[in-house]
Length: 488
Image 1 (cartoon, helix red, strand yellow):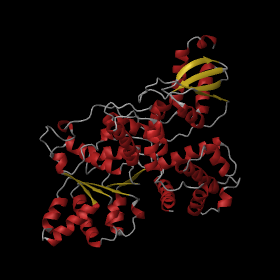
Image 2 (cartoon, helix red, strand yellow; image 1 turned 45 degrees about the vertical axis):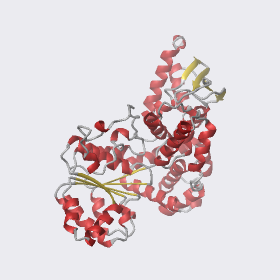
Image 3 (cartoon, helix red, strand yellow; image 1 turned 180 degrees about the vertical axis):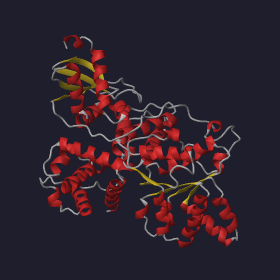
Image 4 (cartoon, helix red, strand yellow; image 1 turned 90 degrees about the vertical axis):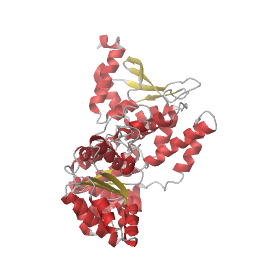
């Protein structure tokens, strides 16, 4: 391999290809490995430059063994990896790393990466759309998107796909391509601010774009209720029914707001049947799966379950970064934003995309209105209004208790060294949920679950993630635990 040492560019490209082939997420590759610059690639020392100290910590925490294996396979010799944070110019932009001088030497055998099956790469970004370019409009005077109650910004092109939303996004695309044929009804459930409303609007835009004559209507469940009450009070029931039973695609948001409203549920039930019998598409969203919708009639929930039920989980950090950069391209207006600001916001706001974008918009507004350079202290100050309002972090004990209750295993048995299948699975689920819902590192999770090492935790997270993606019943079970923890 001596000749390889003289060709660092080729060696590094080979190492990158090895890393790419071992990652399930192209987005993770582009986020964490593409920005790396090799400084020295001769064993036993490999020195790599990364954009900032956040990268140093993140790669050590999640990807060090993967990086080490790829370089050792390429170089044919053991290596010690040293990560150095780059120094930035005094006036940095969102493409330049923050000014710093920090490095960390990494002994072999650090923490293993945590991967999740299936993700999509970030969208290419273009200029902000004008009215004439909005989905479904042939000219600036065509306002069919407005008549459908669709928000012009909420399109598939503006939706960043990550591991948490890849399946649901694919289902929505399929519905938009063949409304009334594929997955009817489509039921999407997710927590607040994770993108279910965005996907509803995106379906409507895509249908209008391919079939301008299609009758598409978006309505929140609360507005559906108010319109029905108004129709009854003003003897316009027939007009109300004609409005909703003669559409090609009905997009109804937050169906949980029909809970306890028996008359509205009955009207929606007959509307649902009329549209389904006519092979018209119905897409429904809620904050929980159909079986968990309280005070909603069983005849409705059973019909929701007849179609495809899918969910959106909270986005991983790569997806959150892609969302922030996409929004910055749309609303940045040339303002310089430190690269560390994206990382800080993405790291601190984890559970709500709406808050994620709102924090960025507020930071940009402060810089624009005050005509000041955006600094990290300014970003920290804005974050206080978002992160400070979050509930207390989940404790590992709560996760263990919820998993034990669901699987019928005593907590002390789950934490024991026993390896029977009936105990190993709930133990792996507990590790997976701690990784998803807490700030604990792999090593800390392992120590919590009976003193196991980080590689065991990484293996458990991978296995549970794969099973969630392929086993609908198991996925519902895990989501039920998450719902229990969020309500607690």
